[in-house]
Length: 201
Image (cartoon, rainbow, N blue to C red; front, side):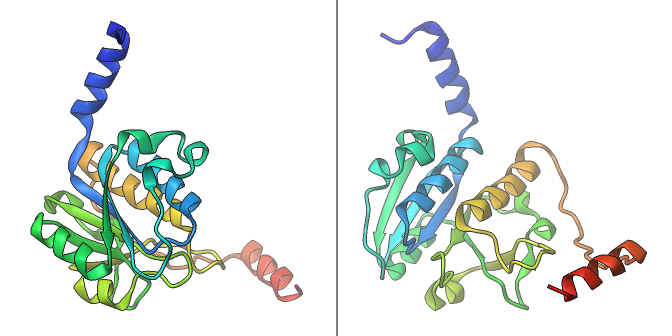
């Protein structure tokens, strides 16, 4: 029999859960990367996770990477899809808006999107190396990217999931407004010195 303290904790967290949003992981190669993403889903209260298997070997998300996920997968609802087409059809049927992470000139910076205006967002993340499939890209209602200014061209999967969900959490739970992204450089002498050091590497 659970203690009253445990009942109170579960009650509070259950009532805070976001049952409209979803995270979609398409064709993830390494189950441990997916497990790390599950932990972020739990942390930011996103209950529903869609796992799509197309070209990669299927795995059971309930039994994957318990140490990596911090046992978060125990508390999440998973929806498994064998094939991207089936996943898209299911998400459409449940009224989701597909918001896919994709580095492309036509993609919108994530902080500029008003996520509060989207009732049932489904945030789509692709394979660690290939990204989202062409089929998923064409089906997406919104293509977005996470602004960054480093020499690395992308974040790893679990970090991307965390950053996207934190932006969603910030707008929907912390009343943070969408923000205009301005990445214009403001160079000075110290920046020029840094550049000279880099060019010698």
